[in-house]
Length: 224
Image 1: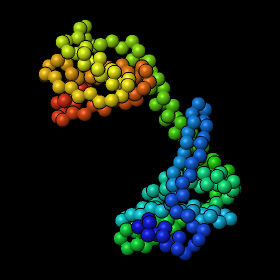
Image 2: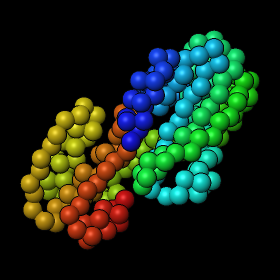
Image 3: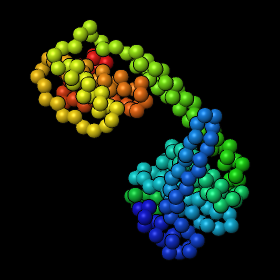
């Protein structure tokens, strides 16, 4: 539906551009944030029009009312980046809603200048930075706590130290390791421990532990 709608726009107006890539770097406190995306449509006129297209099988007015805030927020990001790129001061934003049922559409137009767009953008970014700072502080504490993290048992069972050694090498250097070992040697702790320990090197960020059964998931959880 989007592609068909955009093709018709292009056919009828030579100033229309679809899927226009935009990017801009923001520096907020200690964070460098690169915001980027593709605007659905832009009329490259003296006062440009930035379009955001949404399609739905819900009643159009209901869909607009429920989602306006974030749909408009998305378009505001594109509008700000476009004005900065082209060194312009004003634009219009057009939200377009297309029905997947009967192809009818509704449009809503908003006018902005660069200062009001900038105010909105920095509000979004400052809210995001609050969240980002929580995550960053958590990771710093987590990584420091792994420096002195000892093996959770007094001794290694037979085969555990060898398995942990191989896993730590993979955690630091990358690659794949396939292991076949008997039940009961402690494979779960021997694999989780070295990967958790590797957080201190700040190479890895997350661990995904996949199991075939719920019992395996519970065993991994208890080990952690």
